[in-house]
Amino acid sequence: MRLTPKSATLIVLALLVAITPFFFPSGYYYRVGALLFVNGIAVTGIVILTGYAGQISLGHAGFAGIGAYACALAPVHWGLHPALAAVLGAAISAVLAYLVGRPILRLKGYYLGVATLGFGILVSMVLNNERQLTRGPDGIEVADLGLREVLKGWGLNLTNGEFWYFFCGLCLIIGAWLALNLHNSPTGRALRALHGSEVAARTVGVDVARFKLQAFVISAVYASVAGSLLALQNKFITPDVAGFMHSVEMVTMAVLGGVGSVLGAIFGAGILTLLPQVLTVFAEYEQMVLGLVMLLVMIFLREGLLPSILKKFWGKDE
Amino acid sequence: MSDLLSIEGLGISFGGLKAVNDVSFRVRPGEIVSVIGPNGAGKTTLFNMISGVYLPGAGRVMLDGADVTGMEPHLLARRGMSRTFQNLQIFQSMTVLENVITGYHLQEKGPVVADILGLPSSRRRARKAMAGARELLERVGLTRAAEREAGNLSYGSLKRLEIARALALDPKVLLLDEPAAGCNAVETEEIDHLIAEVAASGVAILLVEHDMKMVMRISNHIVVLDHGEKIAEGDPATVSQNPAVIAAYLGAENAHG
Image (tube, rainbow over all chains, first blue to last red; front, side):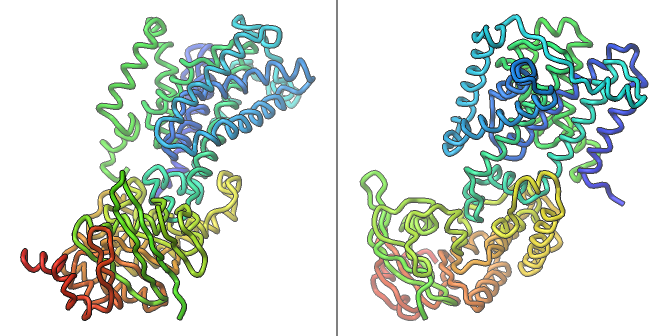
């Protein structure tokens, strides 16, 4: 029996989440793993927007910022449970993506890239400057999700690191599953069609503007959820989460691993999350390395690392 | 029978130059109407106006009794117009089968939430489209290539793939822009049969084609363009006798051949 790419991806991810902890030299690596999964979620959203629909965003960190600060602010100001705050953040991100995307996505070319860039900067500026609300660049603490205590009550006693590792791992698997469902669905086909040839997609009846907008909204929700998870596990968040560098990081991870495939993009997220851990010097040269990686991948491995590797080993069939 | 497609005084200018000027004709159900003319006569421009890619500067396009002038292509698709392209517009990185399934977009689309959750309703829609697509691939002889990436197909196969995708819309009006260009004699004949078959099922077909033998063989009616103007029209026998046509087009062709 041949595995479909969908089940293969999900099995690989599940094994990865379940087995790697056995090789962790210390509890610290749970944290690194959780961070990797959070990045994986954000990048899966980029796969839907860029890999499926062929649209570019340089401002998705803005949505991550909204997700993160929703978790910081809504529990304090409205007494919302942090989990509901994350849902609220996702809803706000979706609405904003719809409002921002609607006028832009009707246009062609690079307008989307530039406009999203502006959107990201705007969110970042608000988070930095509205001190009485966000406490500005110093950051703000975030309430505890409380799920770990609930699990403890059920007799499942996890350390903080373990809890966030498995929780984010589970979220990533769900996120990947949804994205893979989309890939082979009528909507996914319409997205990939308009990516391949917009004029042909129109002639078969695809409402191109509408489907681009859907992809944009869905990917914004992914980024928002990733931002929420980041804020909740750190119990603290700074406006950097919405910064331009974070947006670029997301795109770089996806492009490096392979923006056309969910597993590839997560692979890219893995590499760029682990690299700074392995090479401490990397932190200093991060921007330079990101730029270089982008350049080399674009020149030599247009499809990204993972698809290129798979092609090499399995031949053209994958 | 009433007209399915009626072109009334259609015209467009690019930078002051009249690319197409005051062209009128009609296509009835089951009829094959061909637009011919030398290179640069404005055939593809005319096609692009009819199919909503360009906004006409003058005139009207009537589809099944309704004015659809300048309507966006995806809305025209809903009203039953479908087309192929002179320089192929294939979804390169999708499989051959997926390309044709995409032609069923209007039938298979549904709530995005159902699609993202992989609900049974979404799968049902997709399965139905896939069954139809497989039948169409069979019809154009591409069954064996179904799972291949479309970008890897030969030119002739891609031409047929595009026709299959256009047929997936179950169109009332089908616009074919040089469907046999770049195809060998056998492939041309296959496409010939296919077009005749589609027309016989009651579809109105508008054809742009360079292969004069094919045009003369399958057309019910021919419209001749030169420098963006209609210089003649009629059945194949009449048109091929028309002195203006011979001078503008057939003459040039004969001189080369």
